Image (cartoon, rainbow, N blue to C red; front, side):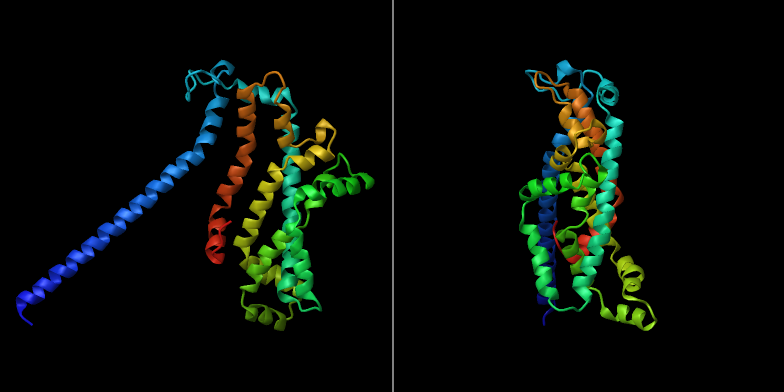
Length: 294
């Protein structure tokens, strides 16, 4: 082949490669731009909440939109601890959310492992029936659950807030999918070495499913922390109210102290953010392992 033809083909290949690089870079920049704009819109309510908590009450609603406070006012953060039993509600939310999370992890791991690895008659049928409970909306079970809790004498007790959510099909389904993806050879080797089924779950399976366990724990903690309706129904004493109920109590019919309410909301958001940041790496690993979008 003549030298000029070879050089022409080489220049054409380089030009095509350069066009692909430019096209790929432009596509990546466009995707990043869209994600940045979406992130800004998603963050705006949180920014407004934080800035409002630092304003005077007169600056919250003005004719012209005013994002920044004229001066930083931390009175809302002080008042929220005195207007209601905020510390007690904070403690109640930690106890309830922590209790539900721990119970869900234990029951979901046991149920998920049984449905994934144990062979017993009707296993798949029982699992489908168990899974069908996910189709029942929570609101449909509120009244029978409350009657049961009242007849058991658990109103205004932590048991009424924790036990109805101690087990659920979502966690069992999620962990079962992880357990099914694990090689059986690991469990068989542990059994040959004399490990019991529970020992296999405790010492072999669960350590390998740490991302799934952390992700499930994060979901359950967020659900329990933000739940409003059930704590409102089964508690009458102020000493048993949770944080979400307390936030509702800060809203008065005639007027609302919005800086104080926003300050309380910021403080209520902090534990969830801390939990997410602490579990972020495991959460991403869990999504990468399953390829699922939660």
